[in-house]
Length: 169
Image (cartoon, rainbow, N blue to C red):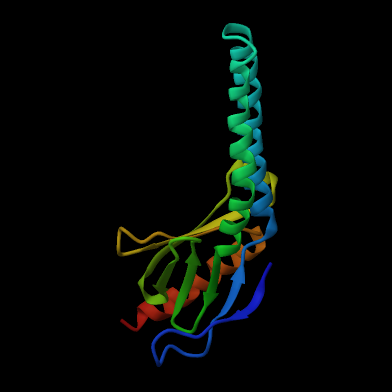
């Protein structure tokens, strides 16, 4: 996990510089495995079927899914490195994106529900995701691929801070 990368805080009065935390490497491994698991069998099937029914020259189109694997491998790494989050005194920051950077600021007092989810593939890789629900329906506040212990710690901390902040409203 990448920790300790500080960047300037937003507007004045937002507190000290946030300490950004990156996502575990297991998420990158999971995404790369899914890329290979889907596209390599597809390449084999395309190669065999085109080779049998259209001729050996057409079987070269089986290289297209393999080219997507070669192209997607480094892109998944760049995307994984772009995800990070920071806990500040009054809100949670989530930053992501390579070409289009997105930074979501979720005030603790606006949180209504904090969920920890983990599907079968995520569990196999020892990962969990945190989903934040606020009063705004369009809020896309989620942090994928955390270690389960960190996801539970974050859920408990955010719930506690949310209850404390909302009581003051």
